[in-house]
Image (tube, rainbow, N blue to C red):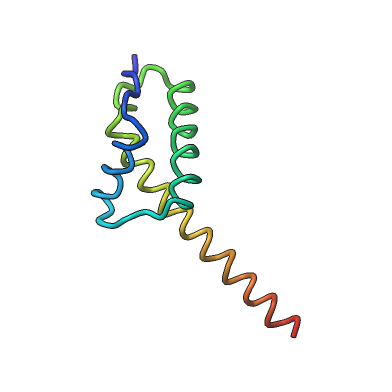
Length: 88
């Protein structure tokens, strides 16, 4: 059975920032953390026999989610800039 997730939001953020080696803006964190926690909840529901879906896994998953969210923001901004340039 998978262990309980006990890491607090504050501790998770500290660990993710340490792992990534940089500060995470509040707006980015506020979108990334709940999404990563939800992703892990779904994995745990689908595969309750997996025992490594724990706090450490959540740190890694959240770090990846932060990077994915940043990339998504970048691509959306680039797309908007291209669309605006074409409209002029």
